[in-house]
Image (cartoon, rainbow, N blue to C red; front, side):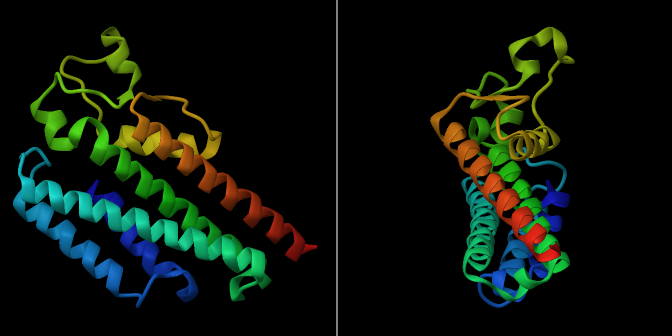
Length: 204
């Protein structure tokens, strides 16, 4: 999770200036401060139940998701109305790739942070509710004793949803999970279709 947030912060710096919300230092700084606070408060693993830690985690994930949505909207607007990065196929593919990967990381963190009440709740309460039905939870014979989903499981969930545009591993059970996956698939489809078609036009 820490590596994913760090990657998202780096990707924010790599975005073209016109796709970043506010000054290029603002969001990465806020995200970095929140991440450091989480690490200091719970350094081994996010397994302490605390209202303050939960609030920091939700704010951090919200910033990452909103930043990705902003960049997506700005990229789509530039593709429709014209923007500096849309006249170069290489610049467009680079910007589109950064936005697409940022969205995948942001939604993976969203799924990880909300499923079953968050990482701490999943660690401390094995009988929690589940918002995503992973194969190991449906059929315990497939899982090792004490198995619970880790961040990599949510990263894979987000990646497959963005590429296949449908759930391929875990099935969403809660309404929020279905809506979030629907939104991610719609965003991924828009980015892939518009960026690739525009890049082909520029090449030709």
